[in-house]
Length: 81
Image (tube, rainbow, N blue to C red):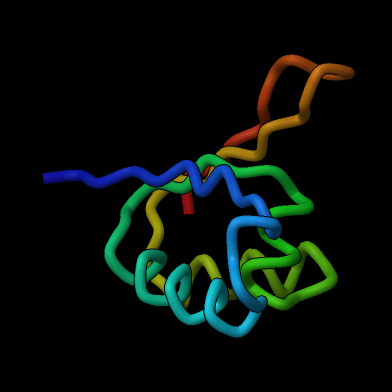
């Protein structure tokens, strides 16, 4: 079975960022495909650069990462890891 996740992260829903980080850290370890924005990934992974994010993707074992570009670029970039 393949499991995908679109985090749709909203900071105002969480009591604090540490709680959000721990929950998403657990979720990220359970999925194969992640569809997210660059901003969400930077926040939830606590990383600043794309190389670190990609390295983290491999560490989690994700097979596919899709980056949503928002309204300005309604397409997404994806890669098989």
